[in-house]
Image (cartoon, rainbow, N blue to C red; front, side, top):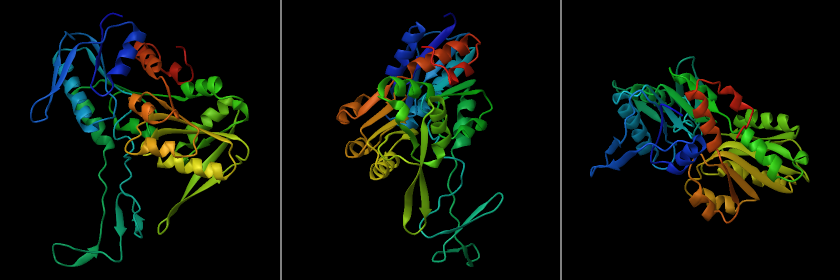
Length: 353
């Protein structure tokens, strides 16, 4: 393809190479390094003047360093007179930190106004400037709009990502955002790899992912169940299963597995409720800390994750429980369509690769 340059950040070069192979174009040359004081240095080694540039950088690993590297790469390409710069973030960083300005903690009582929040604890007093005690206020920083503003300020003209934790995140941007879906890839995996999948049950491990899971259940004409988290301020939270899974194979579907607490707790409840086998299909298998060990010790029989973040180390540690489905084809087709001015919505329901 003419006038197309694909560059890779340091977070996931293997995925960038796979995308280029699908497109039939060479990966662009750039040097990424650190100065002795850990500042990021970017050198674009080829001309991008009047080129349509796609920079692939996933939100994983050293997230903050990788995001800063992406910003500098975008700015460098704009300075070098690129016609258009598209940031391709297979796993979008900070997407889990929604704009909700609080968390319910301990035995705090929460009151919400139209535009503000007050968190009151009867056992904590705050002495204001006048020395008069008043209700304690706890504020949580918001990162959604900040990420969007930084990308657009750096010069990004377009954003491509996959399975945003909160689709409303797209509204923070003043530039086009294509939020690709992994559901077609999950449906393909279920049809090809899970025996007698028609008799299985699609399960969402929390209410937030219900829409994603029900879409898959509807397309495959399968039953659906929900693991609902009932919040109890004093004693933590209790999981409740809505649906019948006894003597059935269960397929957990979620967008992100970070610590893996959510899917392993849901799996324990499904096993207790009589499930015979449990699969888990996850778009972004971040699997930080002891997540892989937690999966190995759980009642989940197989976890299937996308390679939106590097999975080689996770697969080695998982003892055969971890499988990977490839998202490179989806992103390659999206890049091709955007570069040629074609519709991207076709990818939301089809897997033409």
